[in-house]
Image (cartoon, rainbow over all chains, first blue to last red; front, side, top):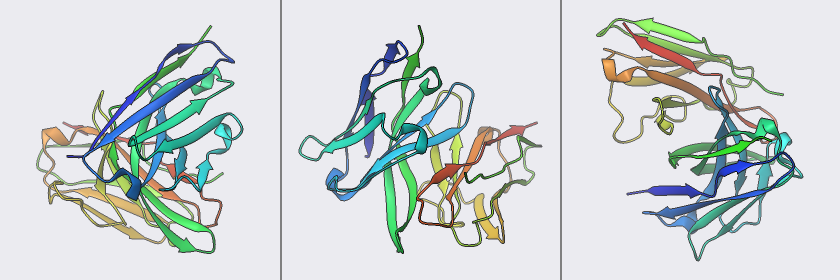
Length: 126
Length: 109
């Protein structure tokens, strides 16, 4: 059974930092792209970042570029999101998601999320 | 930035058919994906690549896409299908921006 378990969330002040972790089990972690998706309270879903199987490619939503860093440790079957310079608008439940990623050519990827963790709340507030 | 547009809400009686639409300019060139989310739970993939159903998803869930509109159809709606439904796709360029629609709340009357 595929399981994704996030940890590391909590309350942080604006401008602060937080590192989220996601422990994977039940599948060969190193064979899959992985992603972070967030959901602000009462709002919709927003893709944040994803990372290739070997960590050689990383992609970010514009609002995360320069502030967030996605990484992975295949030996530990773990995914991470380092979040710096946090803003009030980063307040959300952050989901770790296994990603099915297909290269379509000309630099374009097809991506969807077939398994999700239970989510971890990050609150940015003074 | 690219956007996918969904109706905020859809209401149906048990046993009826619910149709939830998702509009986006790039949908003629990109697949649509659909997720179900119940309160306090993580999203669950219910349709991928426009019309494929993951294992374990009931047959009453189906998907289609034509032109700039993708549609999630739930036939013979049951009370347990009450949830928020989100479509997801990408823009047509190589910007690799993966987006979700705003979500549709399905109410089973």
